[in-house]
Image: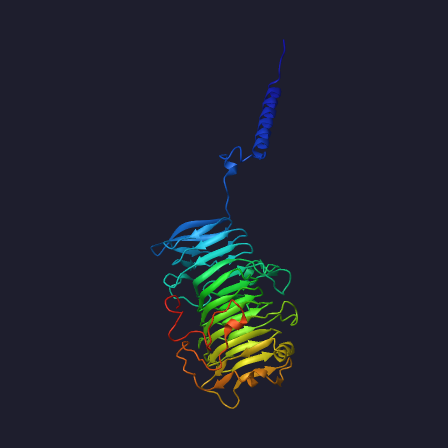
Length: 441
């Protein structure tokens, strides 16, 4: 007769159960062949972004957050709400239909939109149906959200790759013809964000963006910091308006070598700085590739905010070629060249402002239409003042608001390259051909 102890039986049951659990875990952890078993729950796609409906004051919104890792479309019939930093990841395309409004949330998340390196945005609006980025706040103001940041793979001089301000990712590379998509008839309202004096977002931020990217008919309206800023890259921008920027209207640094034509800046009496602030690299003013844009047909309208408002400040070793610019009403001065390296560029012709008008109705004997200073702040000869194609005075030269052009002493921009349109006049907006109508604010 065989007698089995009940404790042994109980132990055997426990061991069998343990083996069963181990087998189940091993099975669940094994690699699943999703091609053979596509319906397996482990084969379901995962996403790092969320789109969820929220109701705010009786209105339905699709709230977007996270990182788009698959192609997505914002349609014009939906209220789109950005929450936090929304990123479009490498290899992904975000399409925004004409007439769409994209709204920044007021939820304490500091919204902004980033098109990462290798990603694209296709925001192709029309004059009758522009694409508008704005804020949900009932009483909007500059800096309500962080704006649009595009990170490309074009050359920069801040390193092989650089880190965007605002924690918006990396940018830079060797692909001058990099393609980040299309921006056409796009308006950004109340964007920009000043986290610190050295960490700021703008209305539009172009970081190392390449020249296969199409950018035309864009407006930055009431944005904190700069309206449109270029950090290196080769992107070209045609038909651009900056209204009431908190700092500079157009700003470049880190080796931007693109083209610009038909630019308008209108300053605010509340807070503004320069219509153009052009830099190379403050840490190495002669580093290559040097900032060297080519720009034609601008109208810049200044305002007095009791600050340092001036038409252009060209410094830190930048080069540039600027033709057919009208600069009216800047109380501090017109155009200044600053630092020895920048003065050297002016003297050898690689920095040029020509066929342009600088005017200020309250000018006095101390007013400087053109000024050049060395690194120590000593005044030196500004060759722009001696260029017979430039004009200065206390008249508005027939300009009404930002509309109107002047034919006398104008250059032909088509001589600057095939990208430029024929426009043998000084200024950006001909009175009888106002390209700002319908889509700007």
